[in-house]
Image (tube, rainbow, N blue to C red; front, side, top):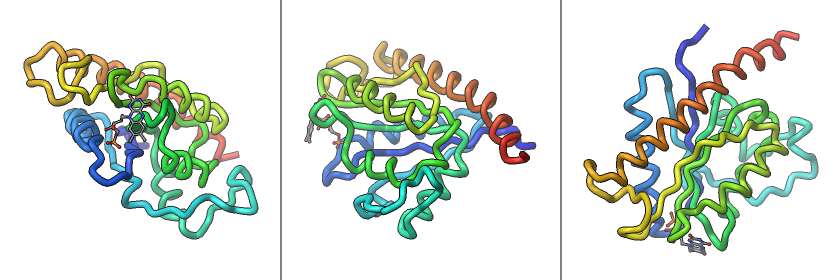
Length: 197
Ligand SMILES: Cc1cc2nc3c(=O)[nH]c(=O)nc-3n(C[C@H](O)[C@H](O)[C@H](O)COP(=O)(O)O)c2cc1C
């Protein structure tokens, strides 16, 4: 039996000059302070998946050959943190494509969201993603982190370490990771029981 929970961070912006790296780096730094987890980053820029065009739904276990490495990464995770920008009130197409390539590796696992954007901090994107999680039988985590990339607006990762804004973000992170781990701890043994049947 393992004691540390394995978390996969999925970074959903691949565009040139993307600004979300500051958000992902902030999150990875926070995760590194935890002794109760292991974690890895899935940067979708490094996972070149074709547009999903499989004749068979992944719900039946089918995985395209180009997605096998991606499937293994998702499969070994016990919980997910999606780091996503908001584009036109929605999530990036590249993120949806990566999600749609798989089904079974997502199921019965908790999924948290770190959303970022302009003045809205990308909160609308989280609501849309949660709807997708439900169809994939993931457990959407209520606690979330919302980050604005506009200087001086709502919590901003570029603010000084001793600022109220940074303290707010740390509190939001702690709430999110604790809830994610609560669900991961509950669901991992349940999945293992299923596999023994
Ligand atoms: C095509 C596009 C649409 C955008 N739409 C929104 C939006 O709906 N809400 C928002 O808060 N920011 C929006 N923005 C601003 C982005 O949140 C901001 O550019 C952010 O840096 C994007 O993340 P990235 O640089 O990591 O890709 C949009 C940006 C782009 C490029």
